[in-house]
Image (cartoon, rainbow, N blue to C red; front, side, top):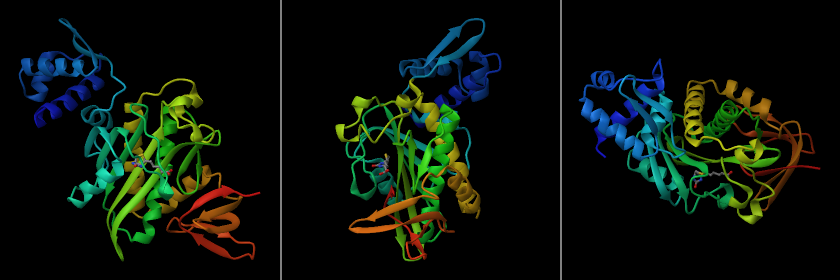
Length: 331
Ligand code: BTN
């Protein structure tokens, strides 16, 4: 597909979604997009072949009846509209090892910030602490965003916190559910993991060169779609809600909210993000055990520091800053 076909598909889907009476005539679309009616017809046929149900009536024109539960860059762009940074360029792959690896390669090759890569399936999805992340085809949202924030490497945690806050809001908007946040960036429903975030970066001592935020959301997985060892600790939006969620709608909402919170952090308003995060974090105020490899740190989680580190009051009454590890709720 040529570049102009892709731009045309985004513009046609946008026009169909915005249509006042629900329909747009071929002549109207052709005039607006400065192409022939035959070119519009050809793209409508191509969109139909992808699974978009588009009604064509001689009197009213074209009407979008439904969209497939597949990820297409043009469809996501049409749903997202314009954003400041995130989602300027959206690429969808059927399969890759890990979207974080793909985004890392793009960033090293000079990709501008805001590029997003989705994969319908990851063959080696990665979680935090070297764990695997189950990413079966067509059931979740597995994606990574390339960012180039003007922040020090020490402040990168702010963006992980922001990503968790944004993802939580997007899930709430689309499903009405209220996920809890577990420090630093897990989203839980009914105490089970529903989404996770893996932040990685290329940095010099005092400067982030690029940062990759990788997000995995268990959207429509059934219990049997998880590996057996995860079935008791992980869940999906579908399992909790009892019905499937349209992934493209959630994908666009995630990018929109990430764009909002990226702007909040980079314009110096991390305090507002931290306040929202704290309201939904079930780790704060609790006695917790943090596991950092062999190291075990106990204390009471009291809040976030200015750079996103967790402030832990240890048994001797001193505040410790924690910037990594696994948190378990203590006894
Ligand atoms: C975690 O909670 O351990 C983080 C999970 C992050 C998973 C996502 S899926 C998209 C991106 N690509 C990866 O390989 N990992 C992240």
